[in-house]
Length: 274
Image 1: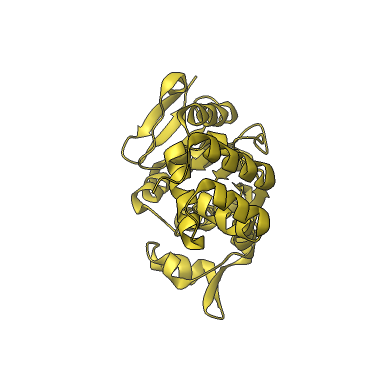
Image 2 (image 1 turned 90 degrees about the vertical axis):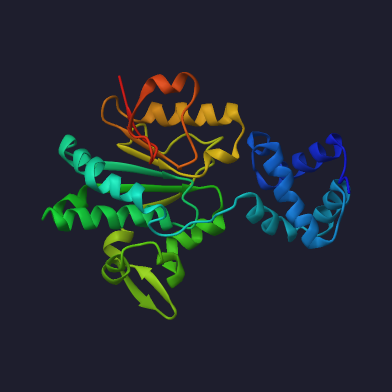
């Protein structure tokens, strides 16, 4: 069944943008239609016009729709090879090249598994190299648009299943059991600052980062928005030092390619060049 024409779809997405503050124009339309359809099926409506009316009459539907639009599938140590590459070569170089604070941006951090994985990788590296003071220099800005996810990130409490891909000692050494969950220890929570940032509208929290990690986020946006985000990341990374990590199915394209060199082609790790 056809849910409606382009005009009714545009009217619906404009209403959602106005109410929720989401820049839906930057999403890939096919992806956007698919995710809205999930909620339409859940509520038993068949047209965009009917779903728009439902939202007006039942505003409690908006948070569920927002969850559908901002998919947050994440685990600790997801794609282990990426974290191993960072720990083996990238992070030691960062510490050696930078005398002061090492600033990291986890962009699109969802419920916090990625930035806390970063904190654990930093801690594990510092322990292995007998440089525990290194950890005092680390600041991780964890940003997302979804405030419910941010609340979970701030609580730093997680079900055991999200640790399935992580080394066993990460959960044992860097978390404590709380009821039927695990909470990241205070020493590592202190490294992570959770902040609300809309990547398409808000500026970065600071003018310079040593490492930007943005994995499996950019793929949901249209090409112009992707290019804009890549340029933003390039702008905040220092030349010949800053490092960018993307998802395994994401890649740089267009003029911004000239601003980076590949460090690890398989793991999509780039260094900012001059």
